Length: 156
Image: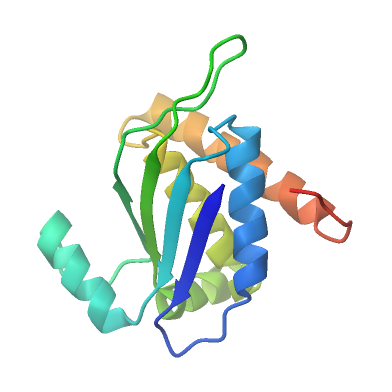
């Protein structure tokens, strides 16, 4: 799997942990091992520009996903499709504010946003209540199992 993490923000980012989290989520979702993903961390000004340009909404947001080859999660007995998964853009300063409000660490909020972004790239959405329930339950399960195992060595 090719996972690029680019920090274009003023925040310190543990790039290795984000690569490990992305690799874990993609593996659990049975995405082709040759799939490509790019994760960018940007400042509020860049995020606001993207938010206005692509969503026609004012102000910066926490995370945006830009799918490329519209890959889907793998299924048992079906060879997953190879290709470019897409880009995820995260705004650490917005994530930090959300983490404070939620009462957890900014790093965990950004890992949540990464997981959320990957699920969007794989076709999950939360526009309808049943979709939201499915997506948020899955992202919670993926993140909790990653966090529970991050103290252990991995071969992913």
